[in-house]
Length: 142
Image 1 (cartoon, rainbow, N blue to C red):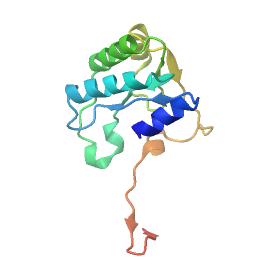
Image 2: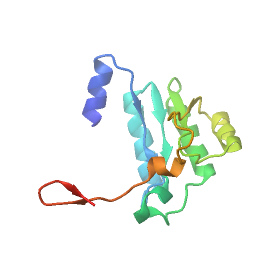
Image 3: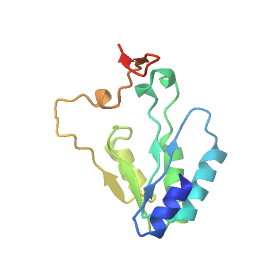
């Protein structure tokens, strides 16, 4: 994947990349390594997205990432990537309006808005994970 990103940059594509923050067993060292890896690419856009545990049954008891840690991650990202757009995703309502303002104050500069076109759709259904049984022939069986 890293080579693909480098290739796309080399042939002139604008690149948006980032990582998921708050994964189970993810250490601060892992996050730091990811941020330093981003520095190699100098991407046009960066999206460090918080892991949303309650959408995945196996991880529903994983604690939410603290706003203070996310603010530090955004701040460090801004220090490392002065010219990149740093995106806050609005798709999962992970942060409230005041928290998003705080993320903008420490370095984010772009808000990615969700628009699915269906006002009646439940946001949790958008991310809902439903395991499927797959037969030995590769067909989905419910």
